[in-house]
Each structure stands twice: as C-alpha cells, then as structure tokens.
Image 1 (cartoon, rainbow, N blue to C red):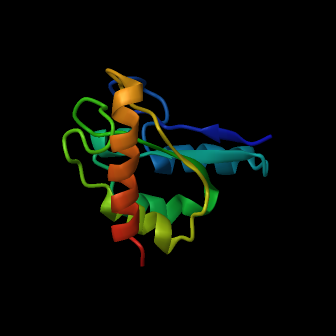
Image 2: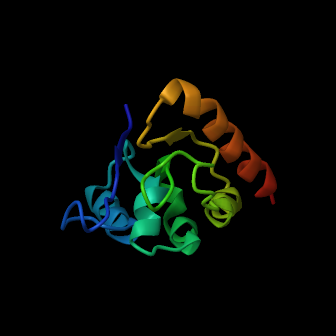
Image 3: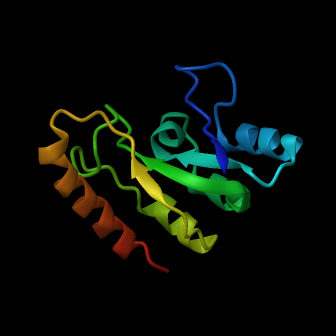
Amino acid sequence: VILALEPLQSSETNFLNNLREGAAMVEAVGHPSFRLLADLYHMMREGETPESIERHGRLLAHCHVAEKDKRTPPGTAGDDFRAFLKALNRIGYRGRMSLECRWENMAREAPAAVAALRKQVEESAV
C-alpha cells in the first residue's frame, strides 16, 4: 500500500501548501510506502512552477489535474498543463493521473476532459 501525501493550497489549509513542504514531510517520515502527490490545481493556485515537479519528482506517487480558476475539468476553460506535463516527462514519471474536478455532468464532461488532457500529454512528449 502506498500512501500519497497531497499538499493543498493555502486557502484550504495552513499546513503543507506546496511540493517542497510535502517533500520535506515525506523525507522526514522516511518510509518507502509514504510518497508525494502533485495536484496541478493546487500547485497553480499557489503559484508553483513545473520546476517543483522536477525538484521533488523522485517522491511522486500520483498526480491530480483540474483547471486553476474553478477546478473545472481540462478543456473547459482551456488551461495549459503542458509545462507541468513536460516536467513529469523529464523526470520519467510513469505513474497515474486522475481528474479531480468539479463536475457539472461527469458523464457528459469526462470524455472531452480526457481528450483535452490526452492532447496536451501528446504535445508534451519530450
């Protein structure tokens, strides 16, 4: 079992608000099953850059994706995730990603969201 620690934006918590702080906690625990989660929504809200992924990527176990403004699914507002996706490619990340979004109608929105994210993933291949 892998436990992935997810740093959240400062408007939601005053503890562990970025990958650097999350990575410090993961390293302090020092257990191979305790890893880090990169949530691109929270990262963008906190002004984190793709370099955070490159710096702490060795600890990543999972990634979440949603658009910055209203946590909408990819493709809704047109957010560009390519710089973050390129960073994931540069560190050799082969883990899973999930869409952690505010859905209005998931059955209707999910196919377009997956297609929009897949397009950016393909465009980000290095």
